[in-house]
Image (tube, rainbow, N blue to C red):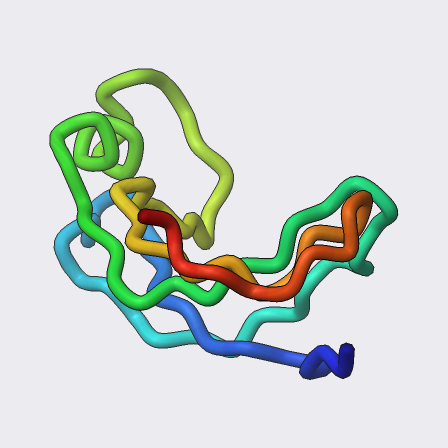
Length: 88
């Protein structure tokens, strides 16, 4: 499977402007033997993400990418070699 050299994602660049998400270009880590490749169709931001970006849970390293309420589609499972299938 071919992977892009870069991809785009929304990040917070400064805790003082934590409501101002910027679309940035990111570099993926190398795909490992135990990694799962997923295509994210949508992602939500919840209260725990807001506490993270606003510094409510301590100092963060910026830029910061948050959001964990994902709706993924499995593309490749390295250890099993399973082709992408929707979760049902």
